Length: 113
Length: 114
Image 1 (cartoon, chains in turn cyan, green):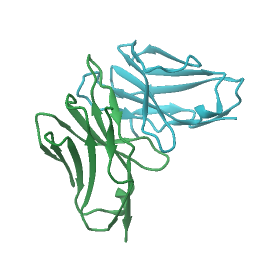
Image 2 (image 1 turned 90 degrees about the vertical axis):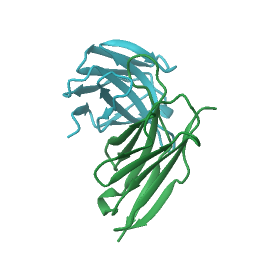
Image 3 (image 1 turned 135 degrees about the vertical axis):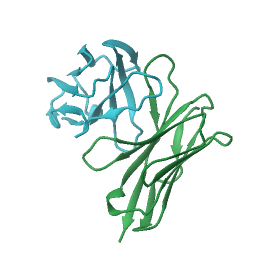
C-alpha cells in the first residue's frame, strides 16, 4: 500500500451529476495535491494544499472544487463535468517541503458520459 | 517554453541487461528532480530523487545522473527484471514557497523481454 487511499477507484457520471472524490493519507504529511492524468499527456497539477490552506490553483475550471478539512483528508467535488474531463485523478501527499517527494494514491478513473 | 520531456516513448530491454531512461529539462532554476514508476492500474511510485547540488545518486539497482550543464537527467536500472516493466516519469520541482510543485515529463514505457 502507498499510504494514500483514494475512493472510489472507478466512477462513471453524467454531465449533470454531482459527485465527490475522496483521498486520505496515513503518512503524517502536511501537503496534499490533486493531479489529472489524461492519455498521452503529462500529469497536470490541479490543486495544492499545505497545512489545510490552498496554495495553488492551476487555472482549474470551477466545475472542480477542492476541499481540505484537515491535513489527512482531501476531496474533489465535481459538478456539470464535460466528457473531456474523463481521466485518472490522482491524489498525492508530501511533507510540504520544497524538496520532499510526493507519494501518490492509485487514483480514481473518472468517465463522464 | 519551459518543459520536462523524455526522448523515447518506448524502450525495450532484455531481461538482465541494464536500462537507461533519459529526460531533458529546460528550466535551469529547477533544483530538485524525481523519478517515478507507474504500473498499469496504479499511481506513480517514487523511485529515487536528486538535488541540484549533486550529480549522481544511487539506490537499490537504480542510479540517477544529473548533468546541469546540458540539463539532462537519466535513470539507470541495473539487471533489468520483468517487474521493472512500467512507464517511467521524470519530474522537476520549480516551486517556490513551502510545498513541492512537480512538473512531469510525458513518460517512457519500459518493456522487458525474456
